Length: 245
Image 1 (cartoon, one colour):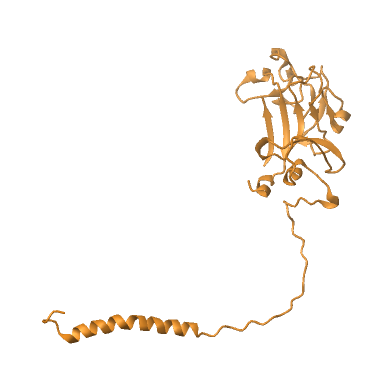
Image 2: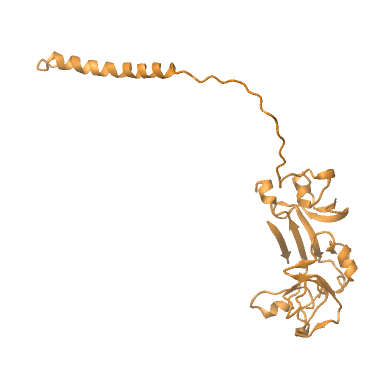
């Protein structure tokens, strides 16, 4: 303390410093003494509600309706499994691609022998068939493929031609447009070399916009597969997927 400073000013300073925690202590004491509302127990009637759960894997009758359901149950090997969306049948499940759970509805395998393995009758396309060792078609009976983009699934014979698109020959079963050239047909003939110019669309076809030469491309293997649209949501991770090589 310097001699020139009045003692009263110094005392006032100490009083101010000491007074602050006292006020805080009083505030704490007052807040802690506030009354808490009393909680009483009341019994309420119990009601049961049915809530739609898209991720529920326990179907009525313990049915397995898709490969996505199997994958979420822990099955992780790509192979044929028995599923029962309406009736019982075997389907190939892809448990590897993009998280698995894909039901393969069509496959054109690299080891498919012959060009005409998918030249089948309407009944065969409805029921499904194998086109060699590992090529197959699941059948329109099981997965609602009868119509696509307002086009009916139909089966064409080898020599059928379309008047409005005379250069395009159709083969196998597909959602053929009623008019004009087709732009896709994954069930067409499996040519081993480039498709001839006058047979555009006759083989396995996947037209690339702006590239007319893509009508004559040859594909070694093709797969069509579907999966529940909510699969990613249910697994925490939509969709129809096409893959070709």
